[in-house]
Amino acid sequence: MDEAWNMEEEFLARLRTGSERAWTQFFFRFDPFIRSVVCWSKWGFDPSAREDVMQNIRTEIPRAIENYRGEQPFRIFLRGICIHRCADEVRRQIKQRERYLPMDVVMEDGESRHLDYAAGKDFDPVYAIAEAEQAALLRRLLEDMGPPCSQVLAQFYLEELSYKEIAARTREPISTIGNRLGRCLERLKEKVEKDSFLRDLCPTSHDSTSGRG
Image (cartoon, rainbow, N blue to C red; front, side, top):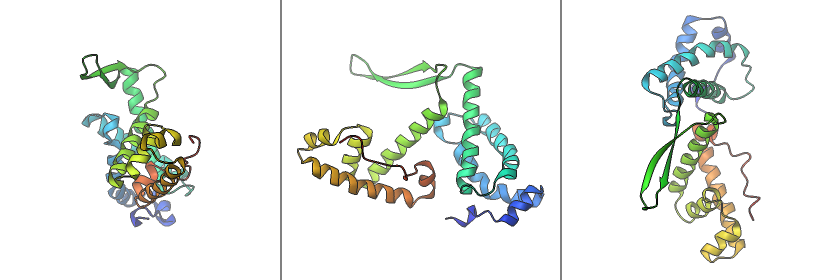
């Protein structure tokens, strides 16, 4: 784990007393991380909104630190604060002005066109953004892995094909598909585990290939 994320109890105690020096050190260490989350392209924030959200996060952190007792890694704790405040800003924008959901569709002439649909009252921006981020992350990981893993994992997770459907497409035994998928999934987990940011965004403890035999 990166030493920058180690939160010694003595340092936490100084933060809780409101030490100006301690808080200066804190934001020097963690402002780049806070900004990186706020600047996710999927939030769609303009520069002004980004600065407002960052200020809201900086305001909340001292209150949150009061109750932090190391129940979870500090990286996950801080990332959670950032994501929740970003989600609050998305909801605020939806409430104050009609926000639209982009969608690319193929028209009758075969051309792809970009349309915007108003976000309905049941639209959950956190879920939509998280889904988009994870899908983009998975595609990048698969591209790095190359065939045959990139192919079988994309077929199973992105196209949601069953073992039988993949076997029919590749003209291979179902057992071969199952074994290959298992090996490739282990490789995928190893890649995620080697990157601290990916571990937080895409935890692997509950991953499974069961359910679509």
